Every structure is written in C-alpha cells, then in structure tokens.
Image (tube, rainbow, N blue to C red; front, side, top):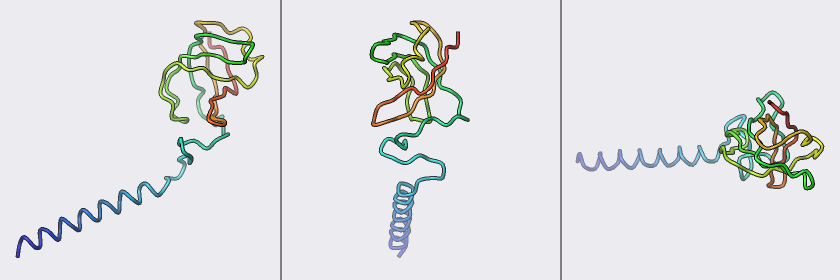
Amino acid sequence: MARRYLFGILALVATLLTIGQVLALAMTPPGEPEGDLGVTHGHAVLSEQPLATGRVVAVDRTTGRITLEYRPIPQLFLDGGTRIFRVREPASLEGLGPGDKVRFEVELDARAYTITRILNSN
C-alpha cells in the first residue's frame, strides 16, 4: 500500500516539475528581449544604459570597421572578447588608433553588430 502512495507522489512531483519547466520556457519575463538571439533586431542599446567599454586593436577607416577588445555586453548577450564591428558613421573613427580606450553603443542589425556611437576615453 505504501509503495502505491510513494509511486503516486513521485509521479505527481515529476509532472509538476515538467509543467513548470514548460511554462518557464514558454513565457518571456517582462523586460526580457525577444528573438532568436535574445535581442530584438534593430534596437540599439538604450541610452540610459551605460556605454560598453573596450580597447582599440585595429581601425580600418576605408571599410568603416574597427576591431575592439571589449568587456561583456549583457544587453546584447555578448561575452567579452575581441571582435570586428561595423561602424555606422565611419567619420567617428577619426583620431582612434590601436591601444585607445573607448566607450561605445552597439546594436544588432541583420545579425551583425554595428557601433552607433563611439567615444575616446583616453
């Protein structure tokens, strides 16, 4: 008799845990971005958010790209590392060179990360 109750309780607990996991995956918490990468495409990092920080590794003014070693950017689910970014306004690269510390805003646009604003922090 005790075995039957134990089996029933274990089955109930397993069912409740499964339902909880399904509901957790199905519901997006308020304020969480939606999308396949966890980012709504085309939305910049909000202005009230602090700017990302990094260090210039290389600048290619002719193609409007910059290589940055950067700290994690949680808003875009980017771990820290080194990456080549497109720059929306190539003129903003003037005066930047390898080793410069920068603060920047970046957005995910068509599955590419584009810097929308960059400031020299030296």
